[in-house]
Length: 263
Ligand SMILES: C[S@@+](CC[C@H](N)C(=O)[O-])C[C@H]1O[C@@H](n2cnc3c(N)ncnc32)[C@H](O)[C@@H]1O
Image (cartoon, rainbow, N blue to C red):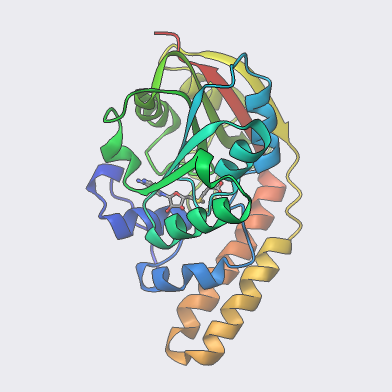
């Protein structure tokens, strides 16, 4: 099934979530089951907490996790750094999962999770000290456009932490959903196009090695057995995820970037 190519603002809520999760809308109800074995949906929670820890911050700073998914990063930041975190996600079952996760990890009093569209909510909050944008890719558009939205959540002088990446030397962007990606220098130019200061870049070696893909495939086979009418879609989804992990290992370099909003 084709992914939507509309501009982010033109997509419906379901289309936006489906785009971010790389699934056809028909499978959205099955996402909690398909991703039941994964807590992190692309981001490395420990590494991101480490990047935040290295910033010059006090204990009273506030954090917003934009597109928090199942809450792995938000809960890690609350637990390890004792910071207040608001997580926002457009997929309601994930918001409920986040609340349960925070409760089970003993940080419910430090965490709030709300259902909402980060594009529509930009500029609607009293600004945060730190905004996280982890593994959402080009959901909000190219990286320069993405940063211009994220900055609206952050005070001047505050921080933006983005987990994304670039095409490795000799790598290809010829994989559905990665057409907008470019090499390191081109991505850094987009990242800093609003005039913010790049404080740090943490390169992560991609070694997905197919583990998450296998877990998703096992869940897909179970759904396909129970619901034969969904078999084609669900198996295609799992196959694409497996292919994407391989594509990432071969072509992509993951990075965590910390920016300081300068004005
Ligand atoms: C690949 S997941 C990453 C989740 C999380 N940051 C992580 O690393 O585990 C992308 C998430 O973005 C959410 N999302 C997509 N578009 C959104 C929007 N406009 N507003 C809020 N959340 C959105 C999806 O529902 C999904 O949970």
